[in-house]
Image (tube, rainbow, N blue to C red; front, side):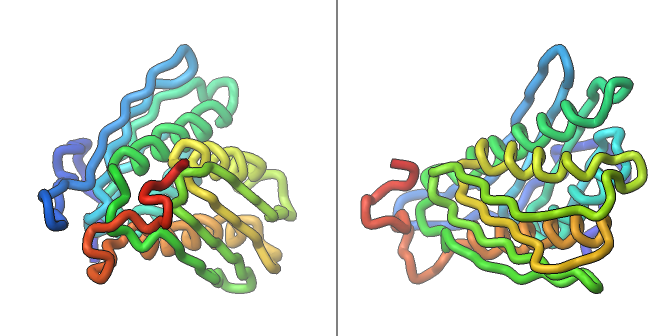
Length: 222
């Protein structure tokens, strides 16, 4: 199984190519985002092995991003320095923005992708449903309730903030619903793992699509 790199070298995230009738593409992207509140660099490889190298300064959030990389099989490097002396909000949201932009850029024209995926993700007593459409039309429907306000020092309300930032900037339609659950850690984990498996399926290249954009319009996002 892939393991996290002990080094901070995002150049490690190099992976296989996919081929259509016209060209060979590397589905990778790097996004740098710097504001007065955060300084973030994200690199993704959609055709990776789930290698993660994540450092945001927020332990629980790092754990969720590690899960996202591992179960999506998307190689992911995230370096974030933020105003954690205030709270975790800006760092969490801005990582969602940068990661969403990186996934969108790596998808390129989206030719040949599977596009849709629906996942039911169990985590012990919890069950969540995640449904994604890589549509180019950003929408988030988030029906998740947490029994506790915090997991460790992490505010559970920030889970929705991250999903919203990711969906809007990735340009995806994303529905996340926890059907039942009692443990806040398990609920958050089922949401991130569910997104991971949905992304893994939706960004995959369908060999039967022959490089076509999966839309009757001939493009996504319009």
